[in-house]
Amino acid sequence: MDIQDTHKRHLDTNFAEWHKSPLSNPPDNQCVEVSFSSNAVGLRDSRNPDGHVLVFDHGEWEAFLGGAASGSFNLPKIP
Image (cartoon, rainbow, N blue to C red):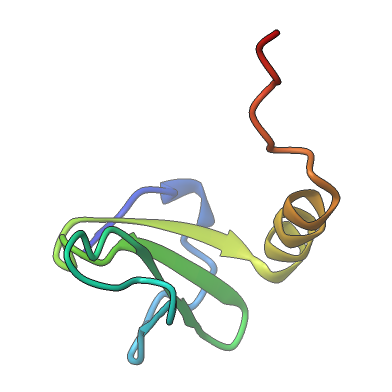
């Protein structure tokens, strides 16, 4: 596992249990997996579990979820 956020060394990155979205279905199985520790959230590519892991503290994760729910990350509509 390659932790990408080296400035967050104070966070617990011992991510033992990973969860994949139930929306990840064959044939593509292209999805991310998420894992939670005492003070961090890990995000990785489900097709490359030994690859890079993005690490968020709980506040950053909540802000990301709020932005996703509000549509902040939607692609712009092309006329």
